[in-house]
Image 1 (cartoon, rainbow, N blue to C red):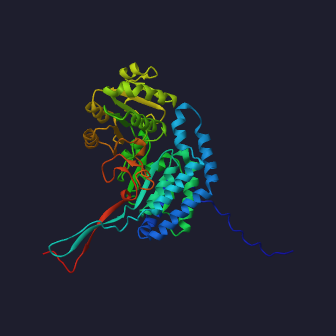
Image 2: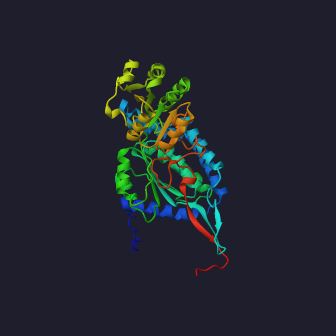
Image 3: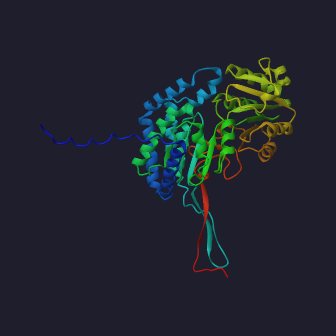
Amino acid sequence: MDLTPEPLKEPAEQQAPPKTNQEYVQDLVKKARAAANKLATLSTTVKDQALLAMADGLMAKSEAILAANEQDVEALGKGKELAATADRLRLTTERIAEMAAGIREIAKLPDPLGETPKMWRRPNGMQVGRMRVPIGVIGIIYESRPNVTADSAALCLKSGNACILRGGSEAIQSNTAIAAILADAAEKAGVPSGAITFVDRTDREVAVELLKQDQYVDLIIPRGGDSLMKTVTEQSRIPVIKHDKGVCHIYVDADADVTMAQRICLNAKVQRPSTCNAMETLLVHQAIARTVLPDLVSRLTAAEVEIRGCPKTCQLCPEAKPADEGDYGKEFLSLILAVKVVKNMDEAMEHIARYGTRHTDSIVTSDYGRALRFVREVDASAVMVNASTRLNDGYQFGLGAEIGISTTRIHARGPMGLEELTCYKFVVFGSGQIRE
């Protein structure tokens, strides 16, 4: 009989308990901060090569992205009230190609870091200037649109910022797929791990915990509805640049070119109504209303737009339904348009000041003086003359992609491109100067 004792068995490896939301978030922000320190000095060549690899990755794995997106769309469900959300959520081959094209455009843009636009010499001989530097770690909290994942990651990378991306639960599969592709491509090209960080937990508490991380995160950018904005602004310990809803107006002046006005208005409402820069309210000068409105409303109705108009609009256009007070100042994000006939430009601007959200407002006019007055007096992130509100967009403005359209006044306003994702530090070149 063999009396040799059996070897002791190692105890079964115990699985570590899942991290709490606090532990999970702190791991992410610490990793992002470490990446930001390295990313700030990464060469333009490495960043541009990474961006091109990220764009190629999206195109190469577009079928996987579409499959993930289909899961999100199916989970969202169907219904008229979900149509706007579904449109913002839906990805197509064309939209993925647009995302990739936007990243490639960013790669072509000049690197803003290190730029010193102005230096001046002091009486003691020292030179003083401002140098453009990254903000650091930027948290982006957003809803619905998966393209925000790609745009934000690319813009933050080129501007030397680490990003922490927290999308909505309705797009979790799409965002997870896109973020993984982008992060993998970037890291293989030499970008530090953690530079593109994605929050894959959808608990609301995770977002709230992220807003407390002022030791590691330098800026929060929220993009979404009223509820998200309220939560972020109330809970955040970190500076916030809001990208709020867009109640966008077009005012058709008395001497507007009728054909131009109709073309602009149709585009602003119909081209993609679920976006924040789509027209939500049309204001028409009473002197031109009879000439402009009947045919324009007919065209809008043919495009399945529901018109909610003032009494004068309903009188001129039988297709229109009477508007109530709640229709003015409402972001429909769908094929619904509020219309009002106004006495003059003063009334139009008063209406915009009362009901607008300082996002995008446009005037259609042939009068140069009134155009300049509208530009000076209307308070919005972008004021347009004879152009569709849909053009308030970073790509359309030549900024490459955008991280969103800021409706706040501090630091950045309007489409936020590369320069808006940087700040300045003072630099001084001396030759032994001291303070007397």
